[in-house]
Length: 167
Image (cartoon, rainbow, N blue to C red; front, side, top):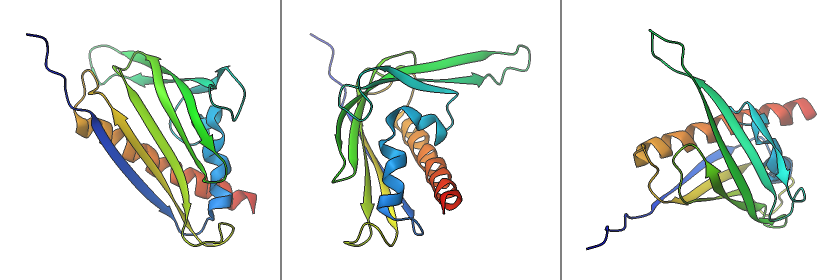
């Protein structure tokens, strides 16, 4: 018999930004090739495609130092991520992880900025980060959930700080 297929992993995390409007926050999310300004990445740049258009591919990488006391281990994690869709009116985008060295086989994420009220220029908003993924080699679902949740928290703090500096 063939190998049983494993169930997909799914999750969604939300962070609220009480002081920032959806109109203030969206430009940081839609700037696909500058995600390294929002979350802990060493490198993020455009590989191919047009900025703000589906098909855009970014290269993201991060250096992680190992915990081994006997040796100084450095690991470079990297991924090529493709923008699948972007909707500037609904303030959402989706992307997939392609070639990578982190164990992802299939991962699609959707990020959305939602206003608290009908006037997206005032009031707070929330950022939603949802995903569907095949199980990731060497990870458990809780690892992926923790990774996304912590990155979303850092992202929100960095966006709040950037919005504060801009005013």
